[in-house]
Length: 321
Image 1 (cartoon, rainbow, N blue to C red):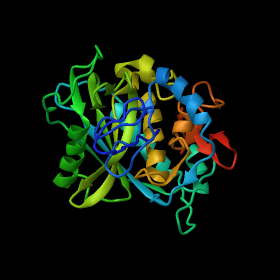
Image 2 (image 1 turned 60 degrees about the vertical axis):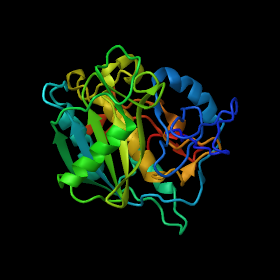
Image 3 (image 1 turned 135 degrees about the vertical axis):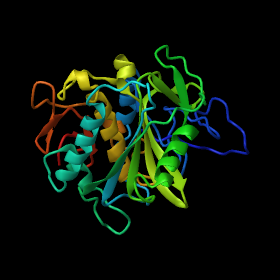
């Protein structure tokens, strides 16, 4: 996703310069690193403006930072008693990550595109993914830590509250010890909003984002994954190969975006273009050619509709290596 720049300049904001200070980044700024918000999957409305900018950023450039040559995924479903998630939502999302893992080493899906990227030693990203576990947290949401303007939402979670959930679940032992090569995906219920800064909120500004948090001294990747069908016009492209009743396909698409960016730019210090866009940003909401009625990927025998990934080898978006 588009990286968000944290600029410190004499502890003041230079108005009109298009930069952000402290905790108030915006999707139109390049990114920072470390525990800053690294960027967002824009809503479909915001993607049109982003596409023009990302297209002018050229190929991805390596900036010397960490990549995940191999990776694990953990899903955390924060679904308090009484909250809403469609039947099949959890199982279909978990099926997706299991399929991505089972297809490791293949060249016929979008994850294969990332194998062209290397670290400072010349080691390539491997298409080698594993499932590290899944947990469902039925505990109640805390009082809203933010305020949004989305009519459909009934609670708003701040980025700090999302991070605290990651720390809580890992600390409970439900998904094992904190692992630096694992990305922890937090899926919230329908009608739950979130904001990482004032005016930068789910369904009006973004559909998902990834960043980092320290857990017991280990820096891990996490992704905030709002329930996309809360506002379908913002975050659902309309492809439902696993059935519209599951509500899962649109969320899987943006989760795929975050997963791949957490592999080739986990800390905001590795692969991005001269304008600060990561590989999935440059192809956001671009699905390429469909191979079936409503899908463009067949992974481990199951169908999915996933946006493309940027390929330096092609200087364009690609669905496979």
